[in-house]
Image 1 (cartoon, each protein chain N blue to C red):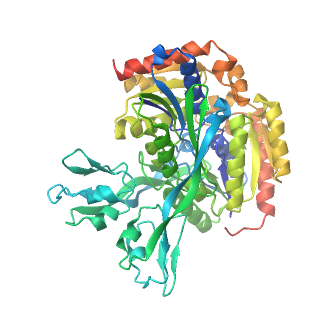
Image 2 (image 1 turned 30 degrees about the vertical axis):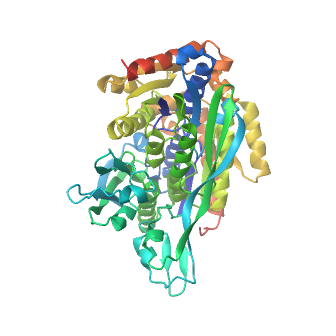
Image 3 (image 1 turned 30 degrees about the horizontal axis):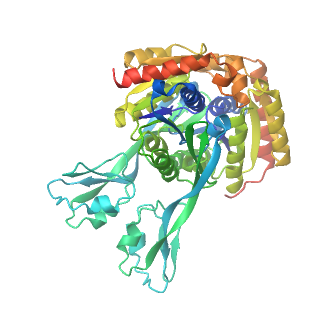
Length: 291
Length: 299
């Protein structure tokens, strides 16, 4: 089972909810969750879960896409590769073929279409994926290299590693913010979308879009966690009621929580009473998935 | 015309609140054009009450469509697709529009030409009038690709309009992260203002966004938001900035008044003249000074 923690807006507390949920499950007896626990940080642009979970990392690999390399001895400069490239990543002049690394998606079209078979593919590194352990939990995260525009292939690799197991697993997946392709890549195949929002007009605006992606586009059931409860207005609650979205948990706006967070302390470590609340959240999710 | 982009790396640090406040302050003494480059979560309009003047479709990228009638179920499309966009239920093949990246590899490889490529409308962009000046903003449809290209369109339109009307400033509210829309948002800017929170995540993400602005040669300055949540980390950020020659142009205290103003649809500087507003006035003075003493830099 995959529970993906997402939100349209950044900084609403995705990582806070995901890490605390995972830590609470880790401390729970196995009968309570009955599964192998995995944490996957798919926010490869700004991976922050490790700051709170402090995993012991033991495996690291580069994430890459297959980029064309042109054999100039075989090339006739016919221009077919540039013609089939949908991303304008190849330019052919009279005696030179230019590949623009930042535009290439690694789709392989040019390689297949070259009539001279003058193109072979070489890996182009765009980031790293690491695996480790936090106590009994498996931890996987990815990091996109600076200046690279393409996150989805790294997210795919993080998910491959996270799901690379025969055993029945419970995966807590921390998604990137936004609602564009990286989020879709993260949410794809999830059993539940846990949307973290704050009760403000910004939070509501972005929650709507995120729900449209998860429930509307991908058909994934969703529930909401309201973070920083107590500020703002009633917009989020009204929206959830009107759209039949359950509010599964509320985390109050408290200075002590903000301070613990700022020092990288998980809420459940600083305030152990939250453990049972996050476990209750997990049970609410189970009820929502299989009522 | 000077272009300022507000970025943060980490989301939710206050980019939009800062962008709206600086737009308000700038508009009281100069002419401003605003661009919301966070096309996934375009919140700037919630503080600007825009009146839409024009609406345009954003056509970008392609989508493969498979004609079931013509398909001979050979599976070649699934074999060549690198984005797992060709689904097979054991009998027939189907293209998942969500995963399809429009690369057309399947289109070229299909032996019976059962696949066609179609334009994809992946969003809209708008030109709107606000009380601070013209706003260019956009909406990327749920789960679409090419947010970077939509950001580029929004910025181009804002720049063109600013040039035509001899505006003094273009203020760009950027997206979170360091990926393609961020790269599009910072291209051509004279200055990037990085909004940072004094948290472990904030400091971690500052290093990554700063490496990104340096990579693209956009000079950066930092404003620490909610600085009083953790004075020690605020100090740490100041030391990091000093070591990297990045000026800290302001420290903004934590105050729920910012959220209260947001609920009323106002940037904090317009809502009251408290500590937050005063610190943002200071930030604007510093930013203005920097923008006007720096030569236009070609990126």
